[in-house]
Length: 154
Length: 190
Image 1 (cartoon, rainbow over the protein chains, first blue to last red):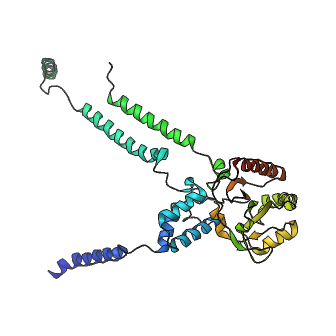
Image 2: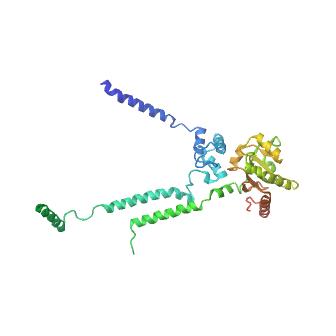
Image 3: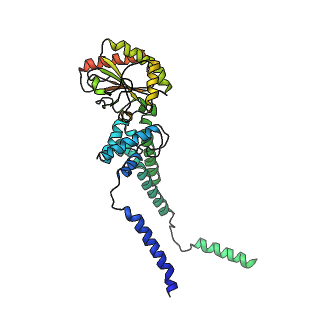
């Protein structure tokens, strides 16, 4: 009896322990470094290809990260620090496209495409649904009769 | 009236979205245009203050308020910077008598020793400040990059790459004329 419950009990303890361990940071405010890393991940490295400031080890990227961290530590909000980057390097320096103005098309277009595709699929499936009577017509009956006769004759 | 089917509506909608996306991408500024422009143009120049590697003590950009200032980001390891340096020396000399134009250099990812040797070899005696943060404040992406600041402290232009004396003088004259016409208004248009 004990052996029967031992494995599930151990598994339950492990799962609860793992959940508790991973959830220990939930509710804790992010540290200055975590906030700076998060902001830096949304800023393109000006001297790299396809890397954010957070990912890059380039000297200029490190300088930008140091400035982001300094501003976060001095009490500026994430939005203020991001605006500072926009004010100095321009909006193009952010990894995410602008969600307002004409740039919002980049966000809206994929959603519209998905909705249209689903609508198209729904319309196509509705059209493919068998339509018409399921009862055999006289022509069908005659066809079957002819086939049966051929079967019987051979 | 002919009735439009769902596939045709979907095709037209997708086509419209594609056209809009192409429009967005086509009207975006390319990398070169972005490099030449700066969000700082038309705004008050960020203050730069730090140790003056050449003259000792501390230097501040605001010390030159009331003059035209060319803020030059450079590095001793940068070949185009070495090429433009004699042009800057001539530019500084040409405006030394009038005192209405000055150069303010900012070191970009370099060591003081290399910077001092650079100036000892090539001349120039303007303030040379070592303040890494300034590169971020000015949105610098590489060297050499220069910013022209009007006497009212507003950034009027960004010069990417090595400058030549002739083009520098032409640019300065153009901005001076626009500045005079605008009579020290907040924004100076070239």
